[in-house]
Structures are given as C-alpha cells and as structure tokens.
Image (tube, rainbow, N blue to C red; front, side, top):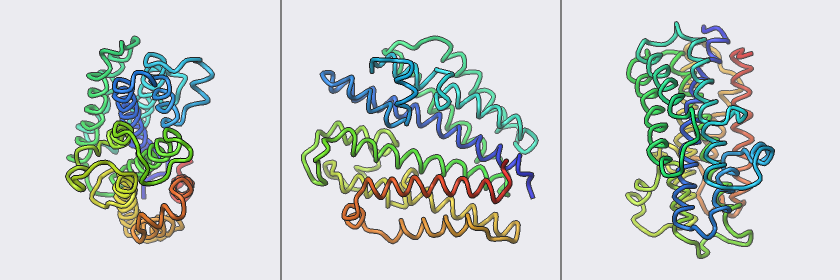
Length: 313
C-alpha cells in the first residue's frame, strides 16, 4: 500500500495540472467573448474571474476588469494560488515529492513544462500575445498527461493520479456551467429563452466541447442541450458523468488492490448513479443551479473523504 504522503502527492500533482489548464481555458473563453462583444468587455472579464472562483482575491488587488488585469491575475500572479504559474509550481513540488513513483518520461514532462512556462510567464503578456500563450499552456498540460498515461504502470499510483484529475475536472466543469448560466445570463432567463450564440459558445469552448457538441447535436445552441452534454453525456471527456465514471472505476481498482471498501467508494458510486439515472428535464425541474451547487458540495466531500481514507495528511 502506498504511503499516504505519496498518494497525496500524486493526487494533488494531477489536480494542479488540470487546474492550470482550466485557468488557460477560462481566459481563452473570456478573450473570445470580449473580442466579439467589445461593448460589454468589462462584464465578460468579470465573468471570467467568477468562473475561476477568484472574485474576492481579484478585488483585493484590482479595481477594474480588463484583459490585462484578469489575464495577469489568472496566469502569472503568485499571490493567486490558482494562477497558472502557482499551479505549475505546485505540480512540480508534488512531482518532486513522488519522484521515485514516476517514470522518467512523466517527471521530465512536468519539469520541462514548468521551465518553459516559467519563462513564458516571467513578464506581463500583451493581449495580442495571449492566444499563442494559452495554447502553449494547454499543450504542456496535455504533454504531462500524455507522458504519464503512456508510460505509467496501471497500479495504485496510476489510480490516485487519475482520481485527482477527474475530481478537479468535475469541479471545473460544474463551476463553469453554473457561473456562466446563472451569472452571465439575466437573472430571469429560463431554459429555452433567447440568448446570444457567443455566450453559449463560450461555455463550450471553456471545456473544449465546441466542435464535439456540433457532432452530437448538429443544431443551434440551446440551454437544455448544452447542460445535457456537459452533465450527462458519458462520451464527452469533461462531462460530469464521464468524470465520475472514471473516479468510480479507479476507486474500485483501489478497493480490489487493498481488499477494502471505504465510505469514499460508496459516495462515488451514489454520485455516478444519480448522474447516470437522470434526464436533463428532471435536473431543470429541480433547478440547474441547485443541482450544480449540490454536486460541487458532494465532489468536495468526496475529495476530503478520499484524503481521510488513504491518510493524505
């Protein structure tokens, strides 16, 4: 059985990789929206900060929502623990802590990403240079995951890492959908109401689902279909269903490896069953915001329970 410290390092290493990429995706979506809706650019950048869950920390340092302020805060501000540079440093710290549990390829992918992006983020980035930088961040995160996925033995080391990835990804998707749907839209908006296509496109681009959505639905954007795709579609790799299927599978491998089922196994199984057994209309009848708020709470509860079960502290 892995030491709790090693399991924790693997879990958090992959949460931080996912979080760094998500910050880049959120900034990318905000940049696209601000460029297409220049008259409301401050509101668009405000929504980016809300999506990142960093409003209080941002307001403590800045009084204006501009591309420069928001991108600098989310990409390279070390006072922001969820900025890309902070996440990369935390990724490397955790990777060094579990260095003997990683293949050479996996370690070098982390180290090279940290060195490359540390240099790229060493100075404020002009708005015109943001798109290639954001692509660079997403590419480095993909290289880390690719090296890990392609070289690591499928044992408990792999399982803890994958659980960390999908816990973070599920949190990201649910927060983006909740904030975009209920903060960006007018408070009185209702599913099926008229909405500017750029707004819906930004939700999908935030989770790299813009093109695949059109493959599945081949229609205009609608609130119900977007929510269905990001919550219930088991084929979409950033949907809540996809994330929890992977969390439950990897926890089940740990149960088999260690011969013990714990409360975290039951929590993940119940959450997966609740997602897989729902129809999107039932979620809207219950309340999308209420559903997502409860999901985020349960997801955080599961992460904490996994930490207790496997002695992360």
